Image (cartoon, rainbow, N blue to C red; front, side, top):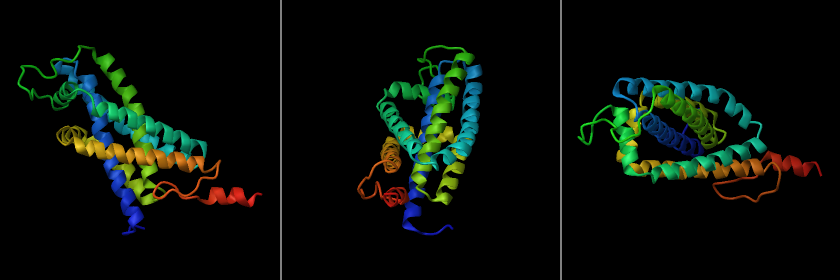
Length: 234
C-alpha cells in the first residue's frame, strides 16, 4: 500500500523526474521535426506527434513491464538500451541553443526572438516527412520512457503505476509546457540524465546477476533469489 517507506519515496521521486525530463525531451524532438513546416500545418504535425507519443506510451506500458518481469537477458537488454538513451540525452543537452530555440518556437507557435518568423531557420519539409520523422522518434522515446520508469520503480508496483500514468498525462497534456520549463532550467534535464544512468546500470546488473555471481554494490545491486536458487542447485 501507499506509505512513507523510504525506498518507495525514493523510487517515486526518480519516476517523476524521469517522466518530466523524457516528456520534455520528446516534445523538443517533435518541435524540431515540425519546425520546418509551414505555419498552417505545423500545429497539426505537433498534435499528431503528441497523440502518437501518448498512445505509444500506453501500448509499451502494457507489454514492457511484463517482459521485464521475466528478468535475465531482457533486463540486460533494457539496461543497455537505457545507456544508449543516456548518450542520446547527453548529445541533445549539448546541442546548439539555436536548434533548441527553433524547436521551442515551433511548439509555442510564437516568434520569441522577434526575427519575423516562427522557426524560420529550420530546413523546409513536407507534412508527410515531418510526421514520419515524428512517429519514428515517438516509438523510440516512448519505449525509453516506459523502460526507465519500470527500472526506477524497482519492484514498487504503486510507483510503477503512478509513473506510467504520469508519463501518459505529461505527454498528452503538458508536453509543450514541460519542454519550455526544461529549456529555461537545463539543470533539471541533467538531474534526469543522471537518474536514468543510475537506473540503466542497476537494471543491467540485475539482469547480469541472473547468470553470474555479483557481489553486493550499495545502492546499485543486491543479490536476490535468482542467485540463491542457482546456489541451491549445486
